[in-house]
Image (cartoon, rainbow, N blue to C red; front, side):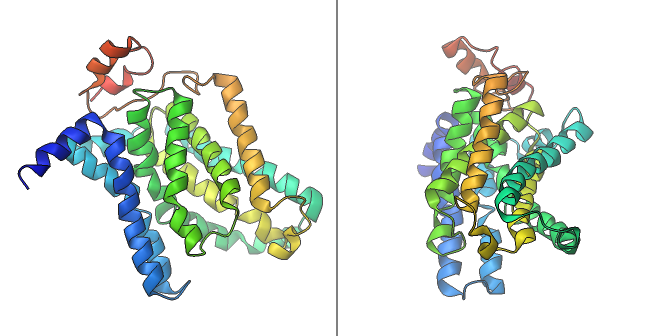
Length: 305
């Protein structure tokens, strides 16, 4: 044990995301494979396991933080602080709503516009779904994805590349959910939408100076709102009249939004300001700036801790 800990600590210091990535997969996949293999599909235990597994990225981030000697309290404190709560919350809920309106418009163009009664009946379910997907089966992943992996990557790469790298890991992380039938959409189409969503969340994270709570709300809002169009039109049977599968529509709209962000802000920062590195510690930021000569790319954010 004494020989292993220093080795892990060195890996955590030198390659934090490379250590975080397999750890996040092992933690989540271990829970999912064990629970999904041993319990009936959609049973309470099966659904509980789905939620527990979603905490894998966050736990992996905490483990690597501790191996590095970083303060988990400072990490959480900085991640839950923002300069403008109202604006940041409005973006976290409003942007997913706008994306969903775009998806809904495409769906309604082929399926027909639902009546107000259908929308009203779903209101209580919408609230329950938002709470669940934000706190248990979606938003809680953000402690790892945007809370840990993204700021580390942005100290080495552009915002676009960092967002795509997180999106690629995020896509692979979902693999057991396809294997065990929780997700039924085409994996390739799903991958496109996740990569585009990761770019959008990178924009959001940098725009709000690294507000993890907002990323959690953004993720939960996307998961909640994008489930609405199929439900208000009558489900899978009604969606059969679409020229492409529903998630293909989602992928197209999400990619379009990502493209708008790229054209508007550029790939380097995906925002009007700087990219956000680690705000909870200053270790490593100086050496990186010396080696790249690009300390102006948001490294000032990483030196606050």
